[in-house]
Image (tube, rainbow, N blue to C red; front, side, top):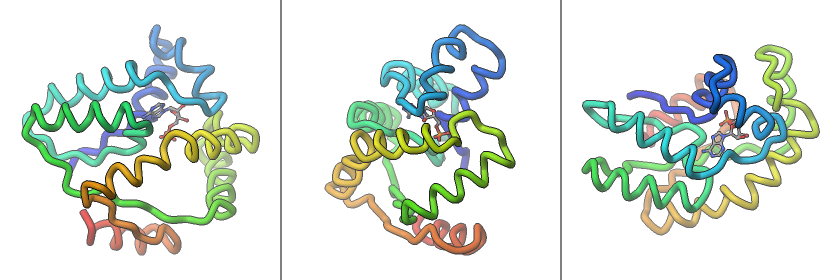
Length: 159
Ligand code: AMP
């Protein structure tokens, strides 16, 4: 399966200094969401260039508008969603991990202030998607605690 991470695509544009990268750089630095139009267009372009749609969406969809657009897009491509794994990790543990990642990857948005905003944005905009996918029977809750290998094997069992 191909992993499609909208965050990675955006960071790649920032690193290459493209017009899109210049536009979104301050948005990522603040931990806000890039506009639905931009993100949906990026995903649409990627999917349309693929022969077979076997994809793990990472960090997408993050809003109801994105989820609805994805649903329509996948319908057009006759590629139904098989599952929406819900990785459950307590907030304290997540903050610890993000601060640890800051030391390794040096991501601009892994600092305490931006992390706080990303949680706020998640609760407001993204958490409601759990109901959206639960209503379609796609949500598979798994614990995100433990070693990467442990989480990976739980994830594999629901994908
Ligand atoms: P991530 O790598 O998934 O943690 O995303 C890093 C940042 O990229 C987010 O905080 C947003 O600013 C932006 N971003 C990534 N994916 C999306 C998305 N689906 N919708 C809007 N903004 C996004």
